Image 1 (cartoon, helix red, strand yellow):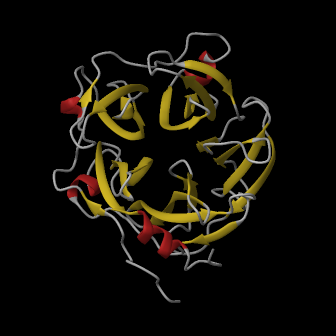
Image 2 (cartoon, rainbow, N blue to C red):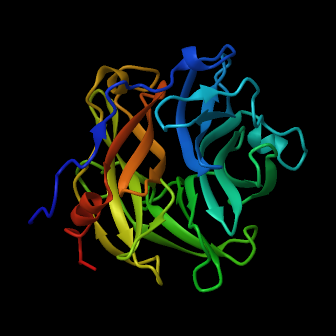
Length: 314
């Protein structure tokens, strides 16, 4: 197989990690797995913060340059007390991703409660309000992202059902006319022996490019010393996002440094957000060892090249 571009396109920020629990203005256990977006010409992260009971909530952090962030004094979203949501969010809100569609920001997150994980969707226009829309899946589902526009008249979401069976750990796609009712679900990528042989999951919301929808995905390998989380990239057809037109069958980013290898969950790099700059550079914000947040950067064109050494080229 010919590798068309740099094998590892991302370079870590020299002052990683960019956020730790010491940067949070109230007591907590860890901060990790942050969604990322530009809002009012500033960088905004939606942080997953785990409290000292081990339950997660969402807090915002803001930056003028994308490197130096200040965490808000107040928690943005706590588990709901509304009877419709409370049983399913009782243990926390986890791993947010954010997508702007027609001027509204939609946050997908994992609602975790005594029945297991569910995908939930909320919205905001100003990052003050956190407006719950629905619990979009039944239990045992997570790692959900929304496409930034409707495709063929439907909202489109990628997620990862985690129930039993031979297809456990596969990446799925599903469609909705209204963001509430989801169906026509199909598996689009299934684990194979190797670096992601245990399970796969989508990591970042898709980005439109001339060649297709670009997204990062994570693969998990079960080893004798525990699970190992690493990152690949894939490219989906613009008109038929069920069709993978390119992907990296090898990992392009994995845990190497102490802050990625040592923590509450060792050997984890887990991006939930990326920002494409005007000059074509990508900022990838990732959770490291479920303990802190770090940043890596790389050129979009290099990522596109290595994606195209998968099944086909655009």
